[in-house]
Structures are given as C-alpha cells and as structure tokens.
Image (cartoon, rainbow, N blue to C red; front, top):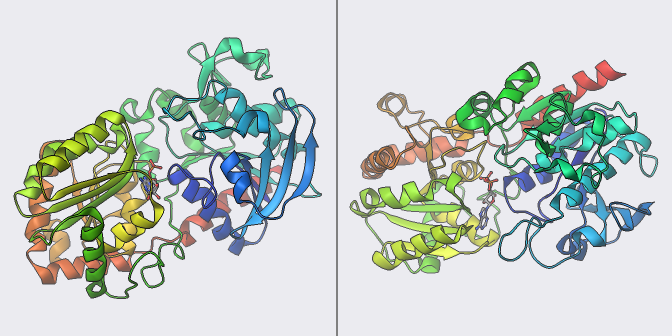
Length: 476
Ligand code: ADP
C-alpha cells in the first residue's frame, strides 16, 4: 500500500470529542495490515503536547498564520504522529474548538487552515524523508488541504471523509487574504458557498474520492433533509462518493479484557456490571431493562424525543442511566427527568471509563438520533451484548438487525429500530423492547447474535485500501 497522510483535528487516545477521534485512532492501525505507512497530522493542542513522550522536530515552519510553528514526529499507542506545534493557534485553555462556554474560537478558520497548509506542505515536499502517496482529510477542519496543495502545484490524490455534514467551517469571504486563499478559485466550482468560504465544500470539490461513514448516510446526504445545504454539491460529486461503515477498536472494546469492567465471555457475566452501573447511578434493582445512553447532548441525538417517550419505558419497570454533556437546556431537562423518577439517573460530564462500564452493564443501549452518519455506541453495544435500540437512519440502519417478528422467528435479530424518528415511534419500540425482555430465551438469543456481529475494522479498512490503491495507481 502507498503511504497515506491523515489530516485530522482529533485522534484517540490523545484527544477526542466524538467518533471522528475513534476513527482517526483506529483506522491507521487497521490499515497497517495492508502495508504502507499511515501518518496522522494532528494539531498540537496543549492537552495533546502534555501527553506526548519523546518527540523529534521533523520540520520548522517560521511563519504559519502569524507565528512560529514546527512539526513534531512521535509514536503514541502504535500511531505514527506528526504534531503541528503552533502555540499561537493551539496552546490555550478551553476546548479544542471553543472556549469553556462552548463558543467557537474566533480564529478557528486560521487554526484549521494552518493544519491544512501543513498537510499540503508535507504532501508536496515530504517530511523527514517520508512522502505520502495519498492525503486523506477528515471533515471540514481538513477541507482546505486540496486548495493549498493546488497552490503548491502538488497533485497527490486527496481523499475526503465526511464524518458529519452538519459542520461546514464557513467563514466570510473577507477572510480570503487572512487564509491565504486564491481569489481566482473563490467560485462555485471550488470553495465558495453562498458568498462564504466553505472549508467543507473545498474538501468536497477538491477530493478525488469522497467517502462517508455508512452506506445509508451516503444515500441520505444526497437529499435536502440530510445534506444540510451540501446535497447539491454531493449530487454533483455522486460518482465519486462511497459509504464505508466505521468499525470499532476491538482491543479497546473487548468485554473479555476491558479493565473498566468485570470481564465476561458470555452474557451471564454481565450481571456484576449491571449492579455496578446501578450503583454508580444510584439506581435500585428493577423489573424492566436497564437502558444506557452515552452521547454528546445535541439536537441531533434525539434526547428530547427520548424524554417524551420515556414514560413508555418507565411504566414497564425499565430504567435509564445517561452520561453526556452539551446543550445546557437538554442538561436541565434531563436533570428534571431524573429528579421526577427514581428509575432515571443522569450524569453530566465526559467519562471514558464509565462509558465502558455502561456498555457492559446495560441491557440496552439507546441511540435515538435524528441523523447519525455512523454512530459508534450501538457498535459497542453489539460487542458487549447490550442490545441497541436505534433510530432507523444512517449507520444505525446499517448495523442493527431489527427484532421484527420475521427476524425473531428466523433468529437473526440484534436490536431494535424505530421509524419514523418520532417520540411516538420510540414509545412503541420501548413496548416491544420490554416485551422481548420478558422472554429471557429470545432475549439471550438476540444478545448472542449481537456479540457475534463483525464490528471491527477489517472489512472497512480493506475498502479504504482499495480506494487508495485505485487512486495511487491512476496518479502514478
Ligand atoms: P458523535 O461523533 O456524533 O459524537 P459517535 O457515536 O460516532 O457520535 O461517537 C461518539 C463517541 O464519543 C463514542 O466513542 C462515545 O462513547 C463517546 N462519548 C460521547 N459522549 C461521551 C461521554 N459523555 N463520556 C464518554 N464518552 C462519550
């Protein structure tokens, strides 16, 4: 396989706000089986620099968007990293995209343009004697990379993956100079989007191949309902668009070895974990299923639908343990729900270890998203024998086999899907869920099916490899 440079704004285990980081951390290792070398270019946020061991300075960049920068090479958790150390852009308190209040940093366009520019320079001239044959950018933060590559006359093929189309990285056209972009390309064929500079569109138009993280999301993106304004651009690029479902890291998420849980092989071993989750959340033993949910709290994730549908679960003796953070209004609404019912408990915050325990101890993992490019927590649920209850959309549609009467009769069900994505349909699925929970034999069969699903990276890494190979072959 040819060498590949990932350009990405987060990467597990160093820095993570969502599924993008999981993919950037796991896919390079999965690709290693195909030969070739993947290096991951990542901003040197303060919290990232704090976690690095030994680094070497691979390159100095005397002026990158108003300050000195350098590329640090290092290895972390089996990943070959190139860290863009640019203190004027990344060394600050607060989050990686915004301040403590959640407000985006004003200089985000420059912060991520710098990442793209560094990526383009590596593509063009190599670093440390290493050169990529493919540049693979992820989401809008990497979108301007092909623009800077074009300016340098670099024709290394660019692959662009959409993890979530909701974020466009738009900025007023007046910032063209500040971002060092070519006025001549500020048009509909490149990165102009309704009078603004759109980093996302730059990536979509500049990519030789576009991928997104499930087949269903690849189809949904072509429609106005899901394309978030980019559906026209995507229809234009449709021949080069492919859906490749995400996998999960089977070592980090392994119920037999997970250090955060009481390990188990078979579903009977889940019960000490269930007790531990109930204890952690202050819930008592209950007759119904323990439903867990781990998520960013945003409109996308359908938390409001869950709150509306919750009585259908609670009336049947079910429980909810929820871990998440985000929209303050949703946090308040969740606290109110928890205060109003002894079988609802909520923890606001981000807690990796607890999220593992919840996957091990839950009976059901809930993902009631309005849209979901792939979704990872339903995959963790499958692996841990925690049946997913999901909205029928995006990757949730592709990864769960609904417990329909036919699927139950033929013994292939792995979870529950509801459609349309409404509180009423979710309520109905809570009823179905509780009915099945009352049939231990059928429930255990579904759990075994879930645990037998292939949720690793093997197949998907091979699909990415095929794309790289076709492009590298075409360009050489
Ligand atoms: P998204 O990328 O839209 O946030 P995904 O389901 O693709 O959704 O990925 C979310 C990832 O972040 C999962 O690994 C999930 O476990 C993790 N996560 C989200 N919120 C929390 C939280 N509060 N604590 C721990 N992990 C979380």
